[in-house]
Amino acid sequence: MTSSEPAVLAEDLAKRYGRVQAVTEVSLRIEHGETMGLCGTNGAGKTTTVEMIAGLRVPDRGRVRVLGLDPRRDRARLRQVLGVQLQDAYLHHALRVSELVELYRSFYPDPRPTDELLDLVDLTRQRRTIFEKLSGGQKQRLSIALALVGRPRVAILDELTTGLDPTARRRMWGTIERLRSDQVTLLLVSHAMEEVERLCDRVAVLDAGRVIAVDTPAGLRSRAGTDTLDEAFVALTGKNLEEAA
Image (cartoon, rainbow, N blue to C red):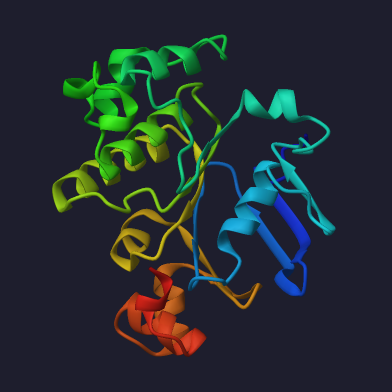
């Protein structure tokens, strides 16, 4: 990988499920240390896009490179540098929080300490709680901790604050800001415009499987002629933000 290559490069990605064209010619370029927001309504193609970037789905067409690695061909190497947190966590329901963290730590040569991870996502008091007894927000925070176990250089976070109360949400924003200061490259899928405004350097807006705009939050507001990012989203897509939830 040369110094001129971005941390994440997706070129002309396309994915169809039966008769549904979920993603059409999506291209994204994320620079090293940048936080890119990915926004769109339900069905816009956000999750399919990030799953193709992470190597969890094979695109019908197009090319992906993460730190110069092909997510399919270089899967083992990519796992060491890419952290992924998706909305739906499928974890062993009978294991305790600390046991799940220790299990994931065993996959990496230099993992973050368990206590540091649990403090990072405010789960220290739940360390002995089994997974199935956690609340929805606690499960979400645990999945974020597991995505960060291996000290990833790139992290994909899908709706990271869904189900969190306001206090937990702001604490999680602080966690993301710490990752940014450590120059971790982040792809943040979110429908919370306040979150996007605070955390993201640039934002890609998806609509009907296509990228219709990429700019800074301020640039999107200026382009749409609006005062808020929520209003800019509606102006760009013609859809109410509530549809993105």
